[in-house]
Image (cartoon, rainbow, N blue to C red):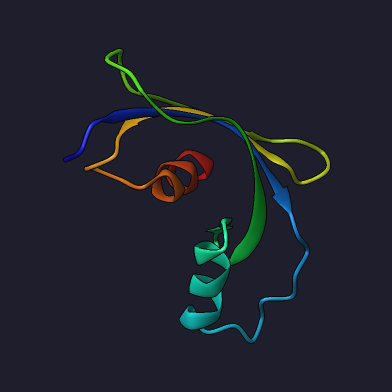
Length: 91
């Protein structure tokens, strides 16, 4: 069952060279708790992870001078994944 979820945290760049990665390599990182944004691998530092909410949707996403992506989102998890929400907010 899908629901509205709230997530907040930081995506810390790993600086792993992904130039020759295929989809299986990225999936392995994702299965081990990392997040892939635009073919870059990030370690997730959670403040809130998937807490349920009933308020409006939003996506507050920004990148600091060190390449760390800070995110605070509220989205319907049946409509888009957290990765998709972050990628869309960055474009």
